[in-house]
Image 1 (tube, each protein chain N blue to C red):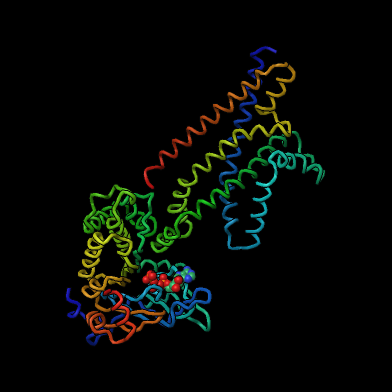
Image 2: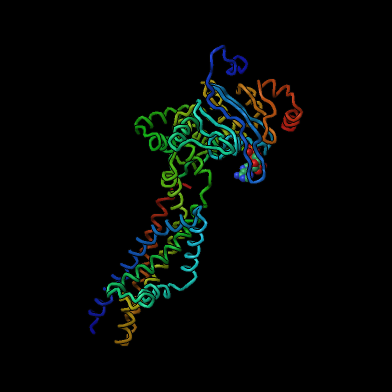
Length: 268
Length: 216
Ligand SMILES: Nc1ncnc2c1ncn2[C@@H]1O[C@H](COP(=O)(O)OP(=O)(O)OP(=O)(O)O)[C@@H](O)[C@H]1O
Ligand SMILES: [Mg+2]
């Protein structure tokens, strides 16, 4: 896919509501400040890759965005709906009913898959749609099968996660997240736990989702993949966004010394 | 005393032992879960109280606990609880004791489930309760079966401790007959009974373990 022909952050005169908006996010663990005033927004159809050295706060940022971690300060909103906002000197999260709705907007794919081991592949995909979204079982099964086909693992529908390779498990995890029809999907190093020969099959399905204009935020160490698939690359270091922009520019011609140092290290 | 009456008497004791066993499990398996939640509660005072309760239950003899439950109400509060209370006291004593052991097993099981399971459920939109019931608990059950089986086997033998407050279960009856008739036969019967009982328990639990072995 050609990232250059698509510039979602150019609005052509009409206003685009950002799918995700995070402003002034601060997060510390104990005395350790991990996110220092991070602001990032993602518009519909955009694919954002987040890169940066270990410990720079990439996972923490995703965990704050997906409400797994509470922020110390800042605002988070999806489609203009506030999930968390700063009032005075405290952060107020939305009411449970509203948070439940907001949780339906996003999905998260973990580095370690986190499939439910006691459920078959199919059940992993249909349980939340049926139990959480109260959808009809027949409909959920039909959609789950379509997703498994798309992931190339429909023959594994009755298998249990422990019977699958890492690459297959991660594809099930992606399908499980998609089964809830999220508007935005987050990935935290989706291929880091995989053997090198298995990363390709997972990157391929993510690339295909990008072609279908699924909105995605992907934390990754795969620079070639980020360069080819992302519309925008965000480089983080020490809890700050150091620079962001067109993947080719950032990766081929980084402006900041820290970005250069990071990329140099990767090449070695 | 004919062999027949001896066996009939022992059989009624057996029934009572089985009754203690079943009611103890029925009470302590669920109560243990509540105790485990208390033990893991965010509320520090509750956590401390539960911790103390568990340490007392595990740190003192069950026989002594049975006596306290049975005689306590009278000596402490001058309460006369009637003749049915003996059986009640046995059940209460066993339930609160075993709940403490089960609670610690549950806690270990719950804490052994990777936190990613709960996080995945949360992101998928499960409520806290349904995440626990649908995702966490089934995995906990599988993991704790060996430890629970141990307790269930110990409980078969522990039912004989009810003799401490003269409740007429299997062992109490066997002892009574043995001393009045000057024969060891009742003890042989009792031994065979406990062994077969445990064999059945172990078999049942093994079946359950196999049924849950379809995943790792
Ligand atoms: N729950 C936590 N408690 C305490 N410290 C934490 C916690 N989670 C993360 N940290 C710390 O926050 C910092 C940022 O961690 P984070 O996982 O966000 O980094 P990352 O950019 O994802 O790194 P990596 O590339 O290694 O995954 C690290 O120093 C980490 O030790
Ligand atoms: Mg990380």
